[in-house]
Image (cartoon, rainbow, N blue to C red; front, side):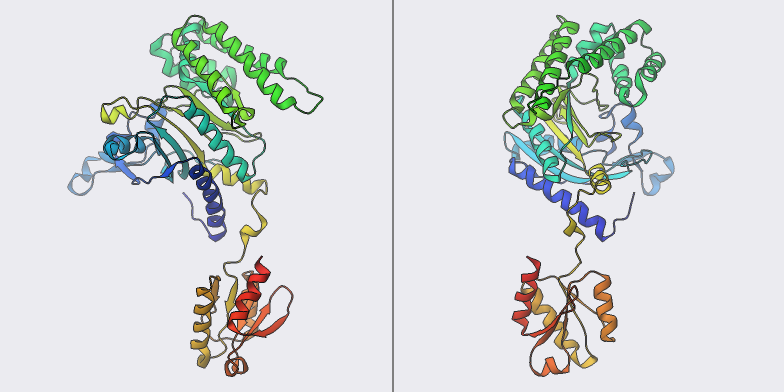
Length: 455
């Protein structure tokens, strides 16, 4: 958990502002929920590892000594959304589209871009089973990243039913599917040998685990073989199309007549096809190894990868059964979350923020010439603020050189001075700290002069 100094906050607000603007253009509405939820609301929704990372809050008062917890800090924004939909369903539209940008807390081990308190930027659509929803979410997340300046990223796409079909075809019994997915989700982190070891530790038969890993190793080889070089400069799109088509073909072959798996493959094909209308299909790569650790996913799952970055910039998927855990009703849902902290880390390291983002905290600083002129300086500051300039006021009478030095150190471009002569003539001396030029103007002219240089 961290403190955020002014420059940090400006970067965060810049990223949040762009993400909100994109989400709202896609018709999503804002929502906020409390930082604290009843612990029963959160437990059992995130899988084995997720339950261990929930920050629990002990009972208070006379119950404190029991060491029991009845509340917990919000682990993500999806489960609270499901609770809200169950609680306020009659007051929400038939197709409820919301975005939510708030902090969540996880008792995780801190690492580069991984913190115990961090913001998620969620966008979810409730009430429709249409694959159009997945295509819209992929497009919205892709557009937000492009607006932020990301040019080289991939939306990895898979489907929980496809995974189930692959696991069945590999001979892994249904009771061990969850264990297999937890291990498989680490494939890109610990490699085939590490996953095989974890399979064994989780009671998965060696031959079934070996067959499953052999399937994924074959896909990797297939992907390399399918990479095309287009001398006309369109290789990237052709390559993605060829790889996705080849992977879908291999999935059909491996899954065979597994009904759920076949249906999932069709839905993957539809997501890619519909995303083409937005041009987002160029970013999508079907990745049958993608599992995502959260247990509430039921359909398509997605994750955004950036080269040379451990971990992802965001992810999501369809979770048609989660709302029903609270309402008892069958309510389809699908969502996507961008990880604000990792986005900021990458953008900072790669110099992706606009240069003017580190601008001074004010456009003008008003000095105080003497104790007798304090009221004049306050009045000028108020007048300039009413004209929508950002104005700082040096808080005490001091040597003018010190006041200029203070403004310069803070990067404030203009300094306004009301000395004895300016006071008598109802004027203001305005100094440009960049050029050293100083002119005497009326208060209204100060506003025009400053705005002219801010354009």
